[in-house]
Image (cartoon, rainbow, N blue to C red; front, side, top):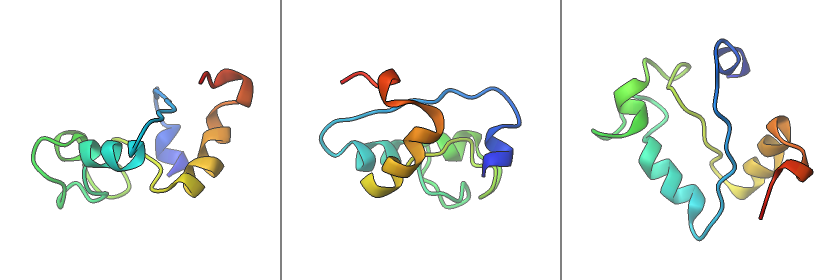
Length: 78
C-alpha cells in the first residue's frame, strides 16, 4: 500500500464528523474496483485491489494509527 501511495503525488486529508468513516467509504466504494458501485472513486479511477486510487481508514482505530503517518497533532485543526 505505501509503495503505491508514495509512487506519485498524493493529497492527504483528515475528515471528521458524524458517521464520517461510513460516509467516506460509501463515496470511495469497495476496496476492489471491480466490485465497487458505479460512480464511486474506486470504480472510476482504480485499476485493481492494490492500485485502487484512494485509501480511507475503515475504523476509528485504524484512523488513530494511520493519521499520524501523515500529520502531527499540531497540523490537525478541530
